[in-house]
Length: 209
Image (cartoon, rainbow, N blue to C red; front, side, top):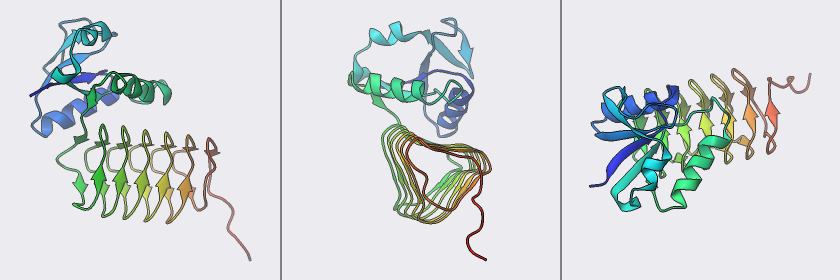
């Protein structure tokens, strides 16, 4: 059985590590160039930086993406794409307190964190994140690398584009599409489609009357 190795152990990485441990997974080590080799994070040893992984065969190691969005979205996606292109597989993470419908699908490297809900027909793409207590209702799609911050609510049949970010506590109403690379600000209410790479900061003015 290949070892599970966490890449990056900052804030998001530690949350992911605790989710894995809560689910009973054994994490063999951590790769993080910002931490000294031999240090322990939640009882798991730091193995070194990327050079440690360079010496490993992809068949012997499965990876977990611990990079959050503290430095923006690009580093998280770059890490995933760089190592998958070298043949490494990223493990999906599902906290045991998350509720995931049997008819939902979770793709490689997806992460569903504590208290989150994914309802029937939901599709969570590669390297996408459903963060703490986020709610994904029926038939929603999170495309690859999309990131839901804590407390987000997606109503039914919402589509979140590749690499899009939905800020903490935002609500996206039914059948809305958020475009690739778009950002929805924390606490916003999204009533209509958001264009690719756009920033949605506020609730639009009511229609009519």
